[in-house]
Image 1 (tube, one colour):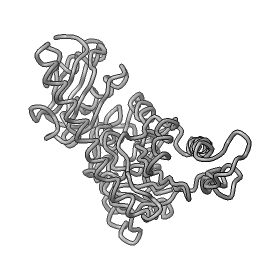
Image 2 (cartoon, rainbow, N blue to C red):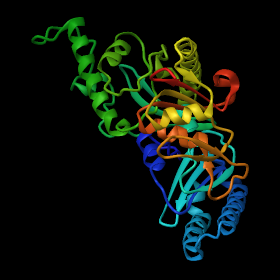
Image 3 (cartoon, rainbow, N blue to C red):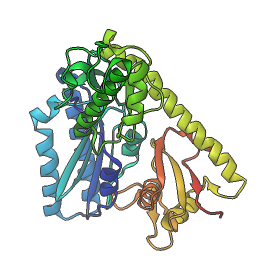
Length: 373
């Protein structure tokens, strides 16, 4: 497996529920090239000192601060940890715990200190991870390839994965058209293909269970249609690589998969924009932060797009959703839009971290609501 720890929706939800006297969120640009990771470690040390300064300015308890800093410095000094990085690193630390996620996305380095974690950049990684699994399926072979942005693709070892269609059903070939009981000829081949595809699907569950990364199929003919009908993984993409995969390397399959991911993302954003336009005529949209905060507090957000690159410091009242903006982003204030996203997630809304140009009107956020305002 590649050195990427993409967060699932449930992991993001768990992080969003954490409250502590100090929650430090660090996002750091890294590199998968081990020989060049030294610069990232230096920058990580600088971000630690920035977090320390914010907490000292807020008169944070010195003993608790020492414990929090020990966790961060232990991570900084862990040579083995820094050997295996991707394009970005997210670190979430309190005096009592520390969690890390290695991400394929190229995120902006930053540190945020509050009583809750800053999750907007992490939402971007979950929204459009530039990552996918590719199932290269043919009668002669089957491979699962894992791909991430700007990282070399890698074949994943899947326990129990059949070698090919014939051996999966105890045959030397599936092209024997002689009669053999009920299963024979082209009809028998179709039955054997179904058995083969079911075995592939069962093996994949061990690797894909609990994940929400897209799965792209590379297959042709009957096998392609059978797998689409049989696959139990809910994130199988509609579009596929409609070529025989045996002739392509893992890198070539990844190259063919990237346009499919890009098109799916562009189509998704376009569909949301079209829905936003329709709901605007029904008074069921807003780009106002205060209105969105109230709606999220009372479970009124259906879909939320947020800008991942900016931070609006302030507070959101737990009961009313009223927003108080502040000028200084210190260890007490937190990202208001980040808090809106957290509350929307808690009520089952779909939340997407995007670039500002993907948000209707180019605002900090855009919300599609469950009821008119």
